[in-house]
Each structure stands twice: as C-alpha cells, then as structure tokens.
Image (cartoon, rainbow, N blue to C red; front, side):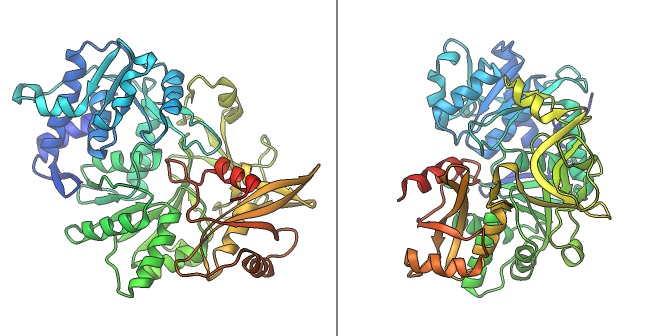
Amino acid sequence: MQFGVSESTRHWGKYRPGSLAVYHNDRVITFRELDELVNIVSNKIENQGISDKRVGIAVRSKLHLLISIIGVLRANKSAVILNTGLPTDALGININDTKISALIFDQAQRRLAGLRRLRKRKLLDIEDAILEADSDAKRHHVGALRQPSDEWGIIFSSGTTGVPKGIERDQSSIITELLGWSIELQLNRDTIFYVGRPIHYAGGLVLSLASLLVGGAICISDLKNDDDPEEAWKDYQNVLRSHTLAWAFFVPDQIRSFVKIAEKTKTPPAGAQTILVMGAPISGEEKIKAAQILGSQIVESWGNSESLGTITEPNDLTTRPNSIGRPFLTDELCILNDGVSLAEPGEVGRIAGSDVAGFFRYSSRPQETDRVRRNGMIVSDDIGYMDKEGYFYICGRDQDCVLINGKTVFLSDVEKTLRTHAQISDCCVVAKPVKEGMLSLAGVIVCNPGATANEMVLLDELNRCLLPPVQLSQIILVNEIPRLPSGKQDKIKISNLVDTGP
C-alpha cells in the first residue's frame, strides 16, 4: 500500500516544501524540514541494523515523538507508541507485552535504557540523532511498500481499569481511520489544527496524522503538565494570536475548566472556528455553554482506540444536544442488548461495530481480545442507545453502571448533577460496598477556589439535589482528582481513597 503518513510527508515535502506542517513551542516546521527530520530517524534505524519489526518509541517531546513515529514507518517498521507518563514498571509490562527489543528514547526517558529486556539491544537517542545529523543523513529513504494487512503499529489504551493494553493496528485500519477523520472534519491543505492533548494516545495521534496526511498543519506544545487547565488555556490563547485555527481538540475536563477561566476573566476569548471534544462523557448543557462562552462551534466525537467512532455536526447542538452523533462514514455501528442481539431504537445496550477496519488484537492479551472481538464485531465497554434516526447516545461505561437498591445507576449521571452545584469544581462518584450484596455511593469532590465548604453541610446540600437511591453516603474533599497519565480519572486510586478516607 503506497499510501500513508510517511508517503504524504515526503509528497508535501517535495510539492509544498515551504508550507507550515508543525507549529511546536513557537517554532515553525515546514514540510521540507519535517521530511528531513523523518529521514534522519529512518536512516538511523537502517544504519544501526535494527532488524526487529517492532520499534518502541518513548519520547516526551511531541515533535520528536511525531517524527519518530513517521520515521519508523518510513523504515518499514511497526511503531510501538509508549506512554512516557507511566511509571517504569508499567512501561516494562508494555514493553514485555509487545515484545520489542529496539527503542527510540530521549533524555527524559533514559531510565528505560536500563530495563532488563532492553539490555544489549538497539537503542536510539532521538535528540543525539538530530544533533549529529549532517546533510547526507537527511537524504530520502525509500522503504518497502506496505501491504494493507501489515502491522502499522501499537497504540496503548488509557489504562482506566489497570495497566494499559497494547492495541495492534494494521495499515488498512489506520489509513481508513485517518481518511474518515479527513472526510468528517473536512481537513485540507489550509487547515490548522490545535491538538491540545498528548499524541501518544489515539485521539491526539489520529488527528495529528490526519491533518498532515492531507497537507494541513498542526499546533502542538510541550506543556509542563498537559492536565493543567491554566497552562493549556494560556498556550491555546497564545497560539491563537499568531494562527487562525480551523479546529482545536480538548477533552471534556479541559472544556469545563476553560469555560470557568473565560467567565472569570470576563473578556471574550479568542477561539478556533470549531472545538472537537472527546475522551469522556459531556452533557448537552455543557456543550451549549462552551459554545456560548468560548466562541467556537462545538463538535463531539465518541470513539475508542480499537477503531469505532461517532461524530456530531455543529447543528446537532440545537436539534439533539445530548447525542454523540452518527457513525463515521467509514464505520458501521449498532447497539447490542445482550452482547449478541441487535437492540431496537431506544433500547439500552453496548455500542458495537463491524471489525472489518478495526484493531487486530491486544498484545499478549488473548482473553481480552476474545472478550472485545465477537462474531465479526468489536463490542465496546460503553453503554448507550440509538434513536430512530440512527443517532447514538451514551449512558456511561460498563464499569460505571451499578445496581443500587434494584435500580440501574450510571455514575456519570450523578456526577453531571453534582457539577451543577455552585461550590463544585470537579468530582468523581464511586460505588462502595456497605454490606453483602449492597452498595452505596460516595463522592470525591474538588471545590471551587474560595469556597468554604464543610463536608457534612455540603453532603446535605448535594443530597437535596439527588433523589434516592443515588444520594451519597459520604463525600471526601480533595485538592484535585487523582488522574491517569491520559488525564482520565484514576478510578482505582479514587476507590482506594474512598475506602480509606482522607
């Protein structure tokens, strides 16, 4: 298959050499420069005689991560994209699962060079490779043609329920997904896309690669903390001073924080034409408010790293604000009411879709693969329903669905109600056992700055807004919600916090 991000980078490097490809930390990278940087990595892999098909990439700089991924692909290797935010032991598990013995790393990840599995193996310091490169090192490298079934790479899940799983994707599934994004978002050579999340996760990765595929540009910044909303907001506004953004991508927690920051400053902020939000549930009310305060159209997408996806259009905010949209042009989705049978419109079940262009398997996790891939379908952990017009709605994840006093409760619905309280900045609700066969709900709460909340008083106020059986038995006030490196709430730590108290 003579078509992909490596080939498009080479193409635009030749035919649009002076055009913006990447705006990184206030540095302009043209397509010619991007292509040359990719060649450095590709040639270095070839010169070092790396024979392993899979090459691990553990690089913190978003620019260096991007050129490492494309460079590995140009060398006709499989890109194993590791999450540098994980502890060393978790990264070691990922490395063992994916069976890599060659690694691209940077100064921030030198800790990995000493891992037992990587001793006496091929290691490439991306920063040294770029600094040492001469003009000859930038020569074009032409790898072998990739076939549709060839392994493209491995992307890791967010690890919401434990150690992240390696998701094996082939060339066909990735290209289908990138084309799907390009079509749905109408990306083109004039598009500038601000990617406000790390690109070692599927969301930031596919949006970055889809933009470059069609000759568009991306804006990426190395923040001290990608989950710090103040820092992210400052960077976003700074980029908007020099670029007209067609798109920006953020997760719901960022959107909620941005709305509060914009309201606090009381000055109309600059904004991208359209903000794409995905990664966790967000209510219609929150999307409508964000559009009003942030001055951008709001489009929501639901999806998973295994390749399923839906997307809304701007006018859906008026007609069906709580919908997560319709399937991508490249996807075929449905609702399974018992994991097997097709549900009727309005009937709640698991969101599922055809596995034709989906992931192949989880690395070294055959039982997990069998659980998700069934009868030609990919069955997600997300619970929702489809209306008569074919638009999808999400109720929550399977792990967030609990039975309280005989009633099914989605914890995300309780959290949505809590967020409307004037004193609450952030929250997470978990279920905890009170006695055999019975559960109660507890809330971990972050209050707004300046709030003078007493736990018992606030608990009483919150329960007035909640009807049985979803009233809380306990709340714990914290300065911040424990989070995974992906930015998602760390449910394991939060549950432990509720069990043990502050």
